Image (tube, rainbow, N blue to C red; front, side):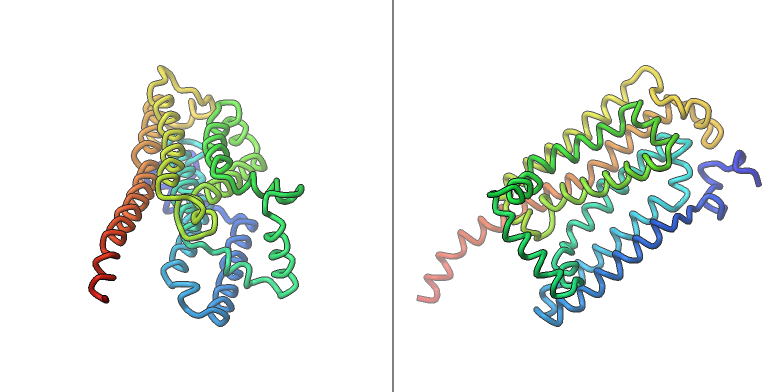
Length: 296
């Protein structure tokens, strides 16, 4: 069957619609293997509590979803449907990235290194105290403000029509876009969720502010796309109807709806978790005097 006859419904059954990019397959497998090896060494060194099974599930699920976004027919449809491209972006930015961040895999990756590599990494970490060239660069990279600006800026940059059209014409630029989505997404969500040192630096209130800023950036972009009077991405003008029967403008509005409906779920869950932490801390503060009185 010719690819011109594939539709949003039938494309899933055709092997040719699945991608077999060696860099994605090998890279995903290598990261999963390094994490598994490092996690086993971490458990041997510090015990099972240092690497709970739930975090491993988060890590492997996040890796599986980023592989699915890049290699499944969603990637093929993303070149022909804006709505599919938006789902593609959401899987990377607000599904795979927060899962990987929630796994807090950095200690496992550290233990995957040989002793000399861990020593070099520890020396770099000790230098990242805000003083000296390395320290100042590290302080900027570790700032929650940097995380928000990078996350929202990357999202908006790649949805500018000129940049967006370039990703559809250049496979290399498209891969750069994917790498930036994952990198900035993991950086942002490492502040917002999980137990990494980045997240530990933020109080629940500051976490809520950070998450709200990221959510607002996505929200405003979805509004702009939803209320455009015409389709703004030229490459889709001649492909949308072939695979979906939709008009380009309808497809654009569905894409905006996906950014709104699907994209907001992880932000709202993260805010709910931060609020729960505040409530739990208040309950502990109230219960502490009573417990001390009972012991006395």
